[in-house]
Amino acid sequence: MADFDSAWKETLDTLFEPFMAFFFSDAHREINWTQPHDPLEQELQEITPASEQGRRVADKLFKVRRTDGQVEWVLVHIEFQSQPEAEFARRMYVYNYRLFDRYNQKVASFAILGDDRPEWRPDRFGYELWGTEVGIRFRTAKLLDYGRDEAALESSANPIAVVVLAHLKTLQNAHNDEGRRVAQVRLVKGLYERGYSAEQVRQLYWLMERMMTLPKPLAELVWNEIHEFEKEKGMPFITTAERVGMEKGLAEGLAKGREEGREEGLEKGLLAGIELGLKLRFAAEGLALMPEIRQIQDADLLGQVMASIEQAGTPDAVRQVWVKP
Amino acid sequence: MPRSSRYPTFASVWKEALVAYLHPFMGFFFPDVQRDIAPARGYERLDGELQEITAESGPARRVADTLVRVWRTNGDEVWLLIHFEVDGPQETDFTSQMFADAGRLFGRYRQKVAGFAVLGDERPFWRPDRFAYEPWGTKFEAQLRTAHLVDYPAELSALAADLNPLAVVVCAYRQALRTVDDDEARRRAKLRLVKGLHAREMWEGEIRQLYCLIDGMMGLPQPQADLAWQELCDFERENGRQYISDAEGVFRVAGWAEVRDNYLRQVEAVLRFKFREPGLALVPEVRRIEDVDLLRKVLATSNWGSA
Image (cartoon, each protein chain N blue to C red):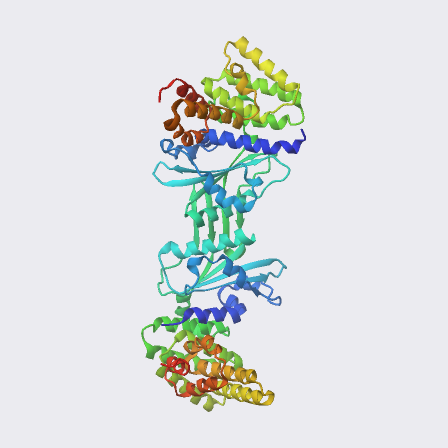
């Protein structure tokens, strides 16, 4: 199962400007990007209907400033599955009128249609009765359309092009693990050609890794291949940095713990190390263990958890350390 | 009476008129829509639903809003939200309000609503009927149908051919607006309207009902009120038909609601004392009757009837 929602959510969190530039360049030009664009998490949460909460969807509300200084609210909605015709548009309408109702705020709505049905293209909701009318219209971008020119995506300097490519390859190989693996390696290797910084390469790698979700043996294969590749190129952006990070986290934690003679310091270091370890080995699935692990107060037990990560085959195996059968 | 304190009266009398004459109202202002409404299925007022969705937006503003359920000739159910924008010192942004209300109604009842507004001001160029916001090719929109009262005659003589009772209501309102600061002129206008009522081919009950609305809109202080009433009585006597003056006790009270309450109390008393339990069972049903003339009939029937 591909994990589109968390990958796209992170994309919106960290790459909103390039996102707008890529999909809606006219709007991008009229936004003053030297001003902060603030995510309005609370407001969005407030108006999200109960039935929507927990749905696998990526949506985000930002407050931006136009180049003329005017404040504008921008709602971005990313949908991964096509659905009955009016359903999606109806939901967009609900978000819109609720924002208007509660915050007296008019919102510009944008939607990314990330599904695999070419003909599914909702872009409005409303009705007309005897010359009266109520409704909304939103801008959309259909990801499938971008697949018609993969060369353009590959040569684009915008990091969103990479996310879109990863998305399309995931759709094309939804039931083909090996296909996704090959695509992932190719995409990751491509990152080094684009002139990105180590940090950018790492970020895009993790996005792709999460989105394309490979079974563990294949993920390891990819990891090793990238490791080799990085060694050859002399660009240890992903593999080394993460391992270093992990070791550093542990070492720092241990050092700090010893130095201050306080268990919290040690725990902090251990937690950081564990988090890195889990992310590295099991990606999102591993990170899902963190809330439970944070409950553990015992530094010895945390040490055991840390030690078990290297050998464990699955996140559940790690869990065995504190959940004794 | 200071000018501004009369606006709430206008709004509530309009609401009474609307409630009493929904089908004629649609026919007078929006004839194409009226033709598409199946009158046999009736106009069902949705006061509770309206209250639900307007509870948050301030009570005063919504006095003159009405929400009704109708059925189209093709059988579809449609809700109508009718707003009366009284000529007042502050105007509400009712077009964007329509967008919000339509959203709430849709969210709560999954219901489509057609928005109508009657603009009751005297400014010929103020005609908002649309709310739209379109950043970057996205869009919010609410389009209403509006009727602007300055487009309709203020004298009943000009509407003699139109037997729609709304013609009378519109004239009364426009005359009331014009005479806000001139009680003498208002008294004369009121008498003209009464004469106009007599000249129309209407049945007695309807004339009384319309007089109540005229009276509600064109309130007069003393001594003009007494003078006006005297003139009315004289006129009716000369004319040989005492539709209004006949019922002096009832109709000299100012408001429609009071007339209705008065009848209602009488009907309830008759039901209670004459029929006891079976009679009391009818009370809730009777309380829902808004039409004063119908209440009059109910009262007459229950006075004579045996069950």
